[in-house]
Length: 258
Image (cartoon, rainbow, N blue to C red; front, side, top):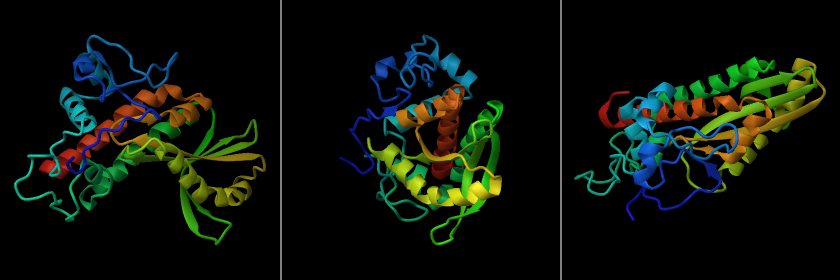
């Protein structure tokens, strides 16, 4: 198996279906059934005419299929490169995971991808009458380290505070969503005393690390968390935003365009 290839399935993910039988791809759209069966595929006979309405052009749709099938033309793809597997920017092995998740060449575009998704979530929470603060600097009680929370949402009616950290990661394993959530809880739970004092809210506080797949997948845990806030209608927009951001990173890496 060449570097970057994968035959794993990810039942923990509620994904958009690009790993399904290729014969079915043109009959599927890139959004979950937002009412009855979140995260499963919606049959749609005119997928390529529907996806631009979700913000994806036909070319981005094709790039999304390539990324999900692990056939994007990175150097580790068998037959793609005549001079080795190494990245031309940082000398790491150029897998798709490397391009979308860690290569220094795409750092600014990765920030942009994350920022766009975070904005979508924050705006949706405001529409649900949460008081929302973004990019909030805070201090951890254990060790006093300075941290920055992506989203702090306050439900003043129920005296409840929520710290949300959406994180885009390349999909690797079934346990990844829970690992991301635990990672973020370890980072931000020590800041809860600071936020209680800052916002004068002594009620319940929660921390949620929301993993979003770099190739447009959304773990079921993320879907369920978003639904608890009544904001599940943004799930298709998050999927689209993640795909668009990753396509921009990939094109910038391969061709110098985004």
